[in-house]
Image (cartoon, rainbow, N blue to C red; front, side, top):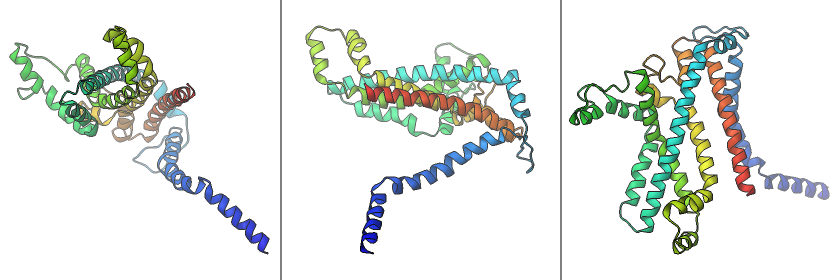
Length: 303
């Protein structure tokens, strides 16, 4: 009897020493908040469900309708243009700010903390508010900030959000401003991992700042930049709130990204099925980017 009790206590102690009791609540939360909703989105894509009626049947017509619609591919093209230019310039701007702050700290200049705080404000502000603020900036009436500035230089009648060709560019600029903060944080953290000895040795050897950037700094933070690019891409593909409050996807469909198309399909045309199909396409894209991210992280750890 005593031996059985000892074995039972040993088993209980062994179980308590495993991470299972600690991970179980997390698994429940993930299952309830992420896995189940994802399953429901995938399931509704194979139905004709509408938010106006409780009944539905299983069918492939929603996928046929979405994938056979030329508008879908137009929206995908707009989304990829939006993502590409946003991510490239977010990463570059964040890197430039990080380099400037790091250099300022090495020279013991005042204001480096202020620059970091100001840059982080764009990340702290909700996307809806960012859209509203940039809406004031792009306002084409006399109260518009940019219109007033350009008028002082003799430029009148400049269109921002009312012309399809310029509207997407304006939304991209707003999103670059919004997303550069994350790029700055990651780039700044990467710069801090570079040993000062390398920088000082390169200066003694007569290496120019450009050569130092290309041959020392960028190779040392290459993994950080890769991670930054992937994370920015995932976040930009899911951008919705800022575009909604800034342009609503207009004029026409000039700024309608994939996440907004899913929203419009569900809440404007009331088609839960088609909205789920668009969401599934976005999920596939994000899953591919997540796999690339994990692969990049693994390669970085191995190296």
